[in-house]
Image 1 (cartoon, one colour):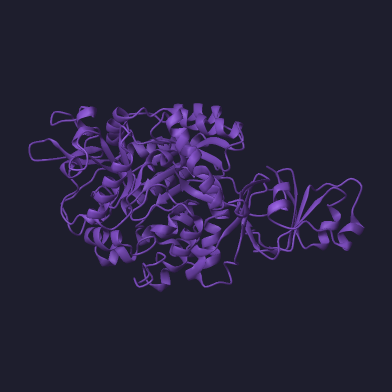
Image 2: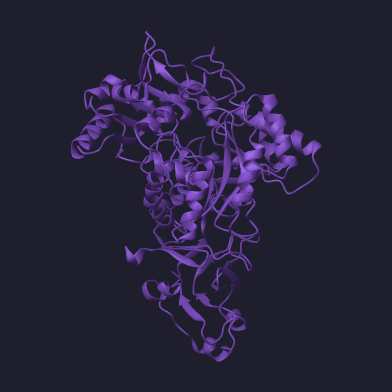
Length: 575
């Protein structure tokens, strides 16, 4: 669907006398967008009023008068009616395929155990024909001591398996029937000892809680057929929502639930059939130190390399999170000093693999929750830079919830992008309970040091990590931008800003983090992320100018239209 749709439902096509007088017989521009407040996000911070587009490429950015040189008879002129235009939002960290697998069934994102159980019960009663009862978004901070048990779910339905995803996507709560079907009992060895396992009762029987994706898949794969069709149905359900949020590109940090080749092929098939409204650049997901990830990644890089779907980098999983004492910190946990988690990838294996990947021109993106994990990856990248020839590196460390002060300037010095989730940058209930217990007040104040890293010269980007979250699973960039700016979640403005007011992020930096900075981290800043001549026509039109409104209301701004690759992917008037 091309821009003709916009002229019908969005903007009134006009041809002013001045433009008509300069029309040429052989136009070079298909579409001319005028009368906008166009924040280009280029280096100079240019604000323009007109854009010329030919095919999927931007051929003009400037004032309306300058369009005279590129338009002609046949050019469609579109009035933006004074609305704000930004580059299409670039999600620096997302899981579109895995999210479509997880976000099924009842939405359980509420702050009440009884409320969760009631929602599961209602869902089960309303869907008696379903062979499995699904739910997602169980918040992990709700239990002061212990976790939900299988018996609590057995009371709802003991005859059908119940599988409820935790809000972080890394844990799950299931009933006895799920364990029975999956063949999990007291004699079942842990899936990945110390990392992915079943919480157990004193007698060794599984208690009801599953930790990390490998063990989750060990159970879920026995409950349902995790095939392409099942996952594709979920992807098709969620893709329009991404477009409606203004997203035009997603950096996929790991396909799970399917074979990685299958996940990329699913997206490639959707692109081929014209059903993919976002660009997807993905990574080979690696969390097994016994596997050499370079050969399969190189094969995937060769197989998937189109404008819309590509496999590019190596995703390294270094640690877990603070809730399960599996994040790596330079100082002991405040509430459990004896906790001593091991890195998922041993440091010597990390160094050797990053060195080889970097030498092969492969960028790495890393899940690093704690400051010790961050330091280990920065050290590995520094080693690679010292030993390999110079090149245009785009390594990324994601989450980096806590960064040791000594390591903050290293992002800029080493050219490493710090990517994290805007919607996590607040003292939400999970942060106020679990994280404060684990780390104490002083370290929590240093969480999500986005502004400090940017001021020290580092590139900072925003990525939702959808569907994973600590408190609220949120994919909409405008919510991320608002929370990063205010350091408070919408609706929770009575809570002090995370890190104090000095940690609040300027609006321009927050927008750049979800556009050009995220594109830089992906190595795609020459194609997307800003509105400049020669770049792809990825745009989002908003109902309000984010620079002029109360920042508390940014999340309420409406996405009017989203354009990806010159195609209209979201039109609010059609809904």
